[in-house]
Amino acid sequence: MASSIPGYHRVMKRVLGRIVLAVVIGLPAIYAADWLIWKARVYVGGGMGTVRVGELIITPLKGNKEEYDWGGTVDVDCSRSLFPHAGEGACWWLNHRKVIYER
Image 1 (tube, rainbow, N blue to C red):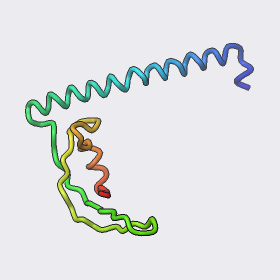
Image 2 (image 1 turned 120 degrees about the vertical axis):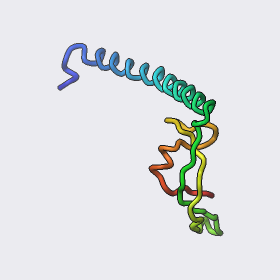
Image 3 (image 1 turned 90 degrees about the vertical axis):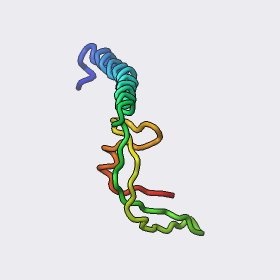
Image 4 (image 1 turned 135 degrees about the vertical axis):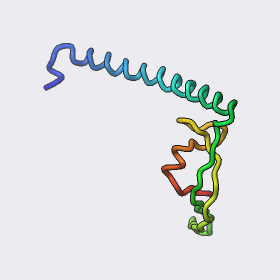
């Protein structure tokens, strides 16, 4: 039914093109802004933090099996930013996932 409307495909291509353009331009811009804000926080001493999480250690065994051992709770370094920086996860992400898996 919708394809019988004159110009429908042209309008949909234009809308989808604008969405793709917004994502292609928007995501790098958001990441760059997040990195600049995080760098400024690191400079004044507040860009990194720690989160206490549970650690589950996964050990490979014979026959494609795995053994799971509880490693207790550990403090994990994290970046106080939207995206992970400095090789560490973002603090908000670790606060919502209280168990990390170590292989």
